[in-house]
Length: 296
Ligand SMILES: Cc1ncc(C[n+]2csc(CCOP(=O)(O)OP(=O)(O)O)c2C)c(N)n1
Ligand code: SF4
Image (cartoon, rainbow, N blue to C red):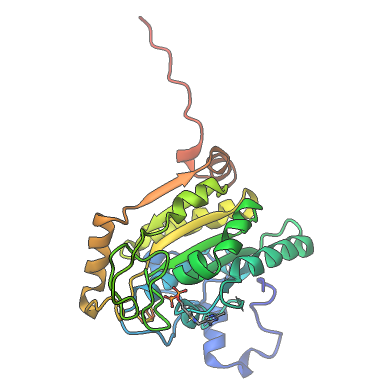
């Protein structure tokens, strides 16, 4: 998993499958690719077995395009719909038991730092709201309290999609689902608030119908996690099956939900801002030059 790995052993190129050659020759490894260039390079994630029109799949696709160093990134996931797509990507994917993902990522991220020292190896967790806020809740929070340096992305479809529609802690109060016929009795969990309290250096909410914004939050989250501390992105990734959203209305729903209760938000600690400004050239986070003195 590095640029040394994503190339052919001399003389073997012509024997490799076409897909593999295409990935080596036209993939994003070692280049700076962007969501605005989709269609001009071979994507790391091209095939998946998820439902047609699933917004989670679109989000995962955009997120993977946005990884700053895909050739040096490992994704970690768990049971749930998202892993069906993430595991098809041409970068390593580690699959933990249901809810274990932030524990697995902690060990992995520490191990990679010991093994590779200063060479960045980015670890990104992507898991559903059930796997993260319910079953994996303790491991998620403790990884943040321990200040583990990796990115956690919640694929928040506000339901257990993969198992047919149970409520999760992230389902909204009153929501009726196939396996919550009386409606949910308590509020959606405030994972954003908990992420801040637990010490995440970057916390953002995003919906997938704005690809550039998705790209921007993923890049910042990964770069901050590299050296500063844990980062958390909560993405609204609707389940069109369990919420009966017609396929042609999936993006409209994302926009409505964004306007209603999933507005874009971004929180950075001062250390994270300084880090992005000084190390990665984000001018907006550099201290503003003192205003020129004007003569009275
Ligand atoms: C220990 C364990 N318990 C239960 C399951 C069954 N299971 C698989 S996916 C899933 C729900 C996934 O819901 P969520 O994490 O919200 O992800 P989504 O499928 O909605 O993306 C459950 C309960 C399991 N695989 N392992
Ligand atoms: S069940 Fe829902 S979240 Fe899962 S793949 Fe289908 S639409 Fe997507």
